[in-house]
Length: 567
Image 1 (cartoon, rainbow, N blue to C red):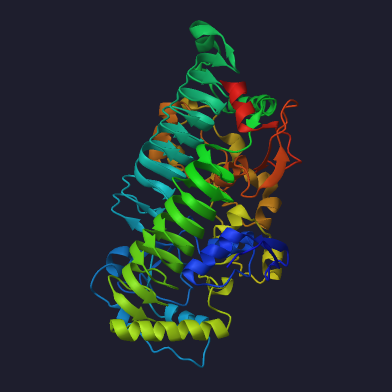
Image 2 (cartoon, rainbow, N blue to C red; image 1 turned 135 degrees about the vertical axis):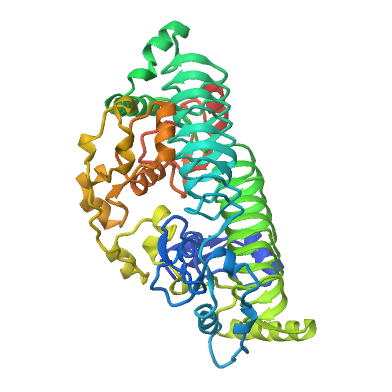
């Protein structure tokens, strides 16, 4: 059958979207109907299931111990601490039930999910890293998320591969002693750098590679002793970049100066390298990839976010090592599986499963481990399973449920607890008007002992007792705006580990709480949306899809023109 482009109206946002011929071929291959939500609404629906960094203190429903969890204490379902949940002390099959063909599948699934114990958080093989989530193999880390193989790192996400003493970094790989940096690889002793690799002692810079001792630079390759893209030599550089005199005022002044300088230098229309026949941003080593963001080593995929080493998949968020998957979120090693979320180790030939570990041929299950041929947590023989599964799919096709991801009202999180609030922020009123849940955090008096204006200007004048202070977040000056989106924590403390790094890097104590610093980093990355544009080099006619919107001030070049500019 020959497929053509088809225009549709999203049943959620009511905007037009297009289903392309290659998409239809994929849906035919996996035997699902075409989607009824547009790509952006499908993405938001998956993000609603992810709470990465809102952590709560609560009791373990099995042991009664105080634990840290991504679930509040008032949720309907039981929550077990990680060690107990993974033990043989309970069996998820005890909650199994028959499928009822007089009820909707999603209603039955929700009844099951609300009685099966939930895993408090995912934090595997980590030492002294209680406050980390969706992470593994970390040591002495704090408030670190979706990260693995790090030591003494804090307040970051997507830090990978032997990160050491990283703070407030996003997308850092094989780096050490870095602060407030985004999308970096193999960097050391760097601060406020973006899209850089193989750099040492580089500050306030963008898109530098193989550089050392550079300050305020953009687009440099293998340079040393450059100050705002000017080669000033070692002696003059060390005179201007004297870290012993760095204080808060100097840093804020340099941030502003670099921001102005940066806007006058062209940018490449996407962030990434080694990409063929693909559209998106923050992508590398991939081919035939469409509308994808923060992806690596992918082939023949579309509508992907935060996905690595994946082939022949559509509509997946935060998955790794996958083939032939659709509408999946938070999965490690999925294969030929659809409509799945928060599953680990391996999940194969399964649909509508959640929080399952190492399962194969399962349907509508929650919390099961190392099982095959289960439906709604009930065990069947191989023959029984396939007969009943096909009958359920036929039934769900009639009820219009087959082919749809879990509805947003079945998320265990409110909109402002989920990652949807990061990428598509809404006010409480707007979220509720769209039918989303909202969690109003109880206002707390943290007993603030010091305001931002009274913090020492530099680290040399900072007393060790700063770790005992409760610091007022400087966003309090614009608290009304922050409260609209439920962002600011209003106050924060400095940990001993954090103070140690500030002393090593000669940095003053931060002015903002973790939540506000995190939000500031998000504003430095382009949105996950593409616009049709053309190269701004007057001698070039190339056109492309870019995440730089037409209203923005950047000078956007195609890849060829940009390479001529920086090399």
